[in-house]
Image (cartoon, rainbow, N blue to C red; front, side, top):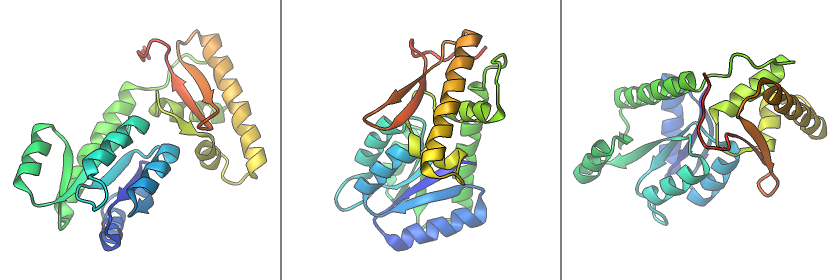
Length: 218
């Protein structure tokens, strides 16, 4: 299920958007922020699939936030929110950016979400798990599939532990994550896959990557 982050300096707007997404879609809103700085920090750890982002905020422009988001969450789809501005809309459409107008209209919101979901689904099919990896456990295979969806992105250790071992104590979940990562590394090596996993200590996060930057799953 796609994870969604909301950023808007107006709390009522966040509540309205959360309610509409819950009623109209299967998206899961994981967090909502009025402070862009807090949102950027949270996004770095949670790696959301979709971000709804207000363009006009008092302390920082939404485009600046989008630039920072795409550096730390390159796989995130950003949907801009803006009041009617003919020049902004022309720019969005020219650059093929997703946007919704304020006040939000249910039909337009649903149409935009469906378009993003279809694009995400195509990307998942293009980056499908390698078919010939000798997985030892289903858990390792599922964890690998999750990392593959976030290929070349840092995914926090805390997020992975909470996602795959939500019922375990933190120390136990960390040990289970370490064991699963070890299994994945061994399976990738045995399959002769170019994919690698590294742990970034400063960020306390894992990354699935290819040394040459090219992902080939054939």
